[in-house]
Length: 160
Ligand code: HEC
Figure 1 (cartoon, rainbow, N blue to C red):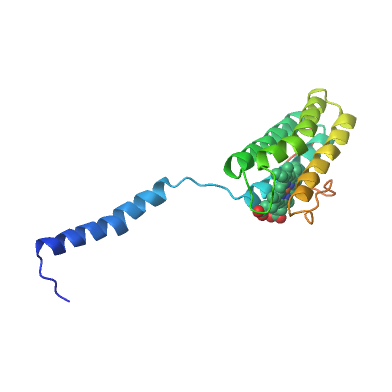
Figure 2 (figure 1 turned 120 degrees about the vertical axis):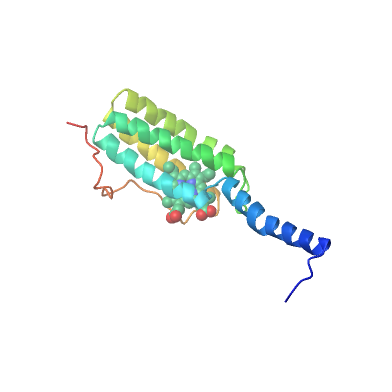
């Protein structure tokens, strides 16, 4: 097809190349990446396991780090997913009621370097995970104490 290059045709060509090329490119470049709640939860699950093995290894610096990562994951969940189509309560409120207290207690145990308290409050954290899953439509998703360490490429005991 040969278009007569009249002014309207040239304008149309320029506009369409701007829309498909330039504008599309910029939109992709600047669109912020937002993790889905399921993705945040996968990371949360990893941090939960690593927190356990760090605590059992009495590697308190690592335990503190993993607890902080766990908290940041919940902050992202609250920020990016304040509501969920299958959950009646607001997510930030659910996190506060199910997680905050036990995470604070784990933090105290880490600071005190007390493995007994750590273990006790870690179990309370796990119960909090399950309380939130039960309060939502995800009660089938049951979190437990990890039984074996899937992360053989990381040191969990106190570094030599
Ligand atoms: C706000 C309430 C809430 C809290 C607190 C919470 N979860 Fe979840 N969790 C969810 C929801 C909702 C889903 C389903 C997300 C989706 O896929 O849309 C989920 C999904 C999951 C999944 C499934 C992800 C997958 O890919 O298999 C795991 C694992 C998980 N959570 C672990 C945890 C752990 C571990 C904790 C505690 C440290 C925790 N969750 C705390 C609400 C919560």
